[in-house]
Image (cartoon, rainbow over all chains, first blue to last red; front, top):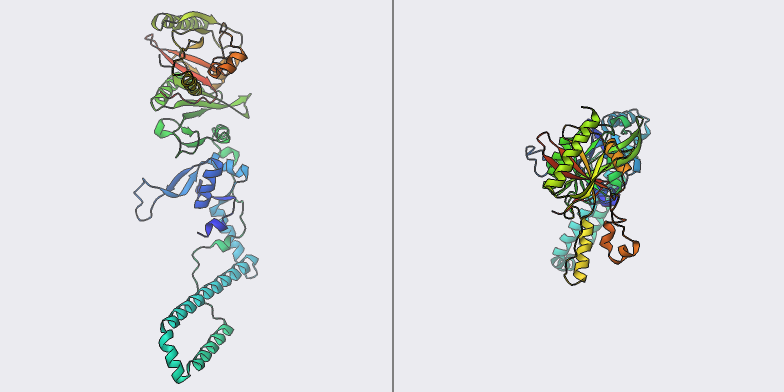
Length: 289
Length: 158
């Protein structure tokens, strides 16, 4: 609806209880279309919270996904609990500028509501007149009274406008309180999982990622949008010097082949304990012998 | 047993298995200073790996030629013997790939003209990625073989 016109990038990512959530459908679409990110839909219906087949908004993002978007300037993170208190503080106090703005905004809304009411009234009136037009004409000729009636009605409307009685409204959102987008939250380096560089490398090459449990790995990677393609890789990410049991490689390779995927594992290169952002990866497939 | 003797025994098992169970020929061992261990290379009885993109090119070429099949000759392949109880890190795998050429020594040369004439040939020459056959040995002398490719290589459509 109106959201398409008013939507502003960057996308707002709400940080709630340590989870990164996107509540705006437009935001979800932008992330998917332009940033190769499909996230996980987590919202269920309040009336039937046990159904978990068809989930909707909000969309949950991983920390590394949120960080990537922030670094690209495509999104900002709003720490909801601290934001809430901060904004409330800004609103309190009689000389608060934010408060004044909010009141002005409210008044504006009430004016719009009144305008809409009036328009509607006018339309009903016109309809009403149109229906009665024919009999009225004859009556008017006979009595000559309607012009007088009309004039008195107009004067009543005018006097009402002078007082400007605005209708009371109940705002359904508090967007006006929010004001300009803030960047209250961040994804600090220590919150990022070890697979962050690995994810970034693949995202830059157009791969989509979904959680990988259903194919037996940590992640599954798709060569494009996950609704258009089958996953190519089931994937694990290790540390550069993590010891991987050979049985894990063999079983994952075997499992990958069984589901027509290749088992891809990788790590971020480390030189003397220092990470360099350089990623190496290897793909394992059954050799067929 | 020292570590060296152990890896030597491992190589022997894999060599035996390749030669007698899988009919490989031209089997040789290959050691290099920067390689974590001795590696094997040899010629399988038939071609073991065809990249999915190469397969597309072969099918295209076969269609153009009027449906005749293009004979696929076997290629020399690297084999890395490992025991199931071992644990390798990504760093060790990276070291193996960094030390190796994509084609084992003695692979036939393919000239640029040949590659231009028949594009699928490039997958045996300049476009061949680094791959190693992972030979995992169990104590009961079972050997399983898995390809391990360097970088992102899309899966084959088996």
